[in-house]
Every structure is written in C-alpha cells, then in structure tokens.
Length: 332
Image 1 (tube, rainbow, N blue to C red):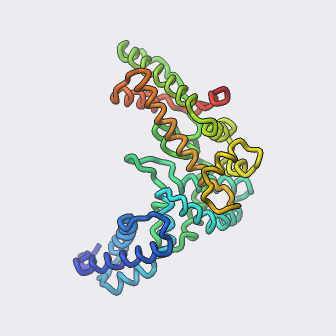
Image 2: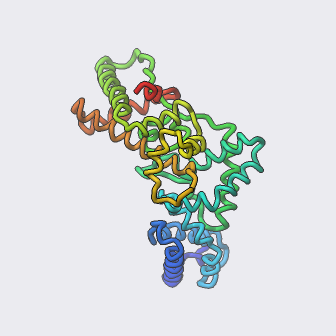
Image 3: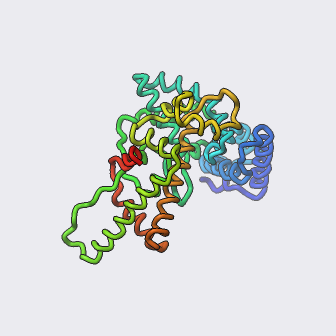
C-alpha cells in the first residue's frame, strides 16, 4: 500500500460515522437479526482496509464514502446474522435465496442429482463445518458485501460443484464431530490401531484404560439421548438420508419427528416448509448434547479429571476413522 493511502484520524472518523449509519439503517430494517454494531464494524473495516491496500492513489472522504455506497449492506447484514446462527435470518435467507440457488445449481450441474448434492454441500458450508478456537466458522464470513449476495452464492455453488467430485471424507476429531455439522463429520467410528512394538508397556496400559472408558462413554451418551435425537442421528448417519430428505420427512404427518419438530418451530410462520438449514441446527444441538453426555460420563463413572478427559478426547481424535460409529443407534 502506498504511504498516502494510510488511514488518518479524520478518515477513520469518517469510516466510523458511515459504519454507524449503515448499522442503524440495517437494524431498522431487520431488528430481529441480532447483529451487533461491533460485528458489522469488524466486517466493514476489513473490507475498507482491503480497499485502501488495493488503492494506488490517495483515498479521501469522497472516495471512502463512494466505497461504502457500493456495499450491499442489507445482504451483508443478513450474511452476518446467518453466520451467527440467527433463526430469523436463516428463515429469511431460505425464503429469499433458496429458489435462486436451486436454479443456479441445476444450470451448472450435469444432473439433477448433482444439483441436489451441491445444494446440500453449500448449505453445510454456509452453516459452518469447522470449529476454530471454539467458534464455528461459516462460509458467510467470506462475504464482504462488495457485490450482491446472489453473485457471491453463484461463485460458491460453482466451487462446491467442482469440489463435490474430488472431495473425500477426511478423518475428524471427536470435537469436530460433536461441535460441527458437515458431511466430513457424518461418518466416523472407533478403530483399534495396530500394536506398536516400540511403544512402552506403561503407555499401552494407559491407552487401553482410556480407550475402554472412551468407548463406554460414547455408547452411554447415545443411550441417554432423547428418542428424537437418536432418530435424527439414525436418519442422517445410519440410513444416510440427506438434509433435504430429513426435511421432507418432517412435513410427513406419519413421521415420528414431525410432532417434535412442530413444537420446536411453533413460532414460525404457519405453513412454512422445513429447510436444510433448520435440520442442520437440530443436528448441531444433538452433537453438542452427545459431547456434553460423553464428558459427563467420563467424570461421573470414571472419576476422571479434566486432564483425564482431555486424554480421552485426544485418544478419540486418533481413533476416529471412516466407519459406522452410529450403528448402535439402531438397537439403542
């Protein structure tokens, strides 16, 4: 960046003023999105900084205001709210952009199956498939508001379609499985590693102790889940139903999940369909409950300390491979 493009105090005040104005307008339009001014400010400040870094000429108040005038503020506000997991924002996103995403996917994909696959994949990305420093990372975090959200979604769909045909299921840790939602976290099992002749006996004894406790804690956690939680995991992980297929089941009057889902969504508009993003939120809550029960079991039944539990988590991370950890739900 050229020295003259460095932001000075006057330009910073102008930046802060415009961000405050944008926040007030967005909040007035969507008061239920729950986006804080600090959250919006961080996003817009990053975009402004990139704009300044890319500029080869001096940026003054007029240029900065022209930059903010080009920001699609309402789209950015919606994206930030969705990234934060706001229920109302996700409902608005589904209503406004779901149909467009399906049309784009059908246009770009070779088959209807590929189109549906990519929509599932994009929704998982948008909701967040990774946890970094204890926070879920949503694809929405990459949207800056420079350009419409639909143009950005088209790019996301295209990249996901390309990735769909070459991506495999990576190994994931127990933390990732229980704290995130994603196809990579959908299939996992404990597998006993081959014996390492160089491992010391005391280490192997310790690992065996933790392994037994870990496997039992996972089994007990599944046993203590509510029926609807077990059924949701069974549909997704054992029967390998897609998010959209589970969503359609919720609309079927004969589905065991329908009554529970209706109670959970009774504040939503009558007659509204169930969307993939809603199913992902229910799955995430179920994963979080599995993690909670897993840790509680280790503490209560084994009198494990926080350090012991951490050892079990690390052991689990090394033992999770592609497989069928969830088959026990069929008889649980």
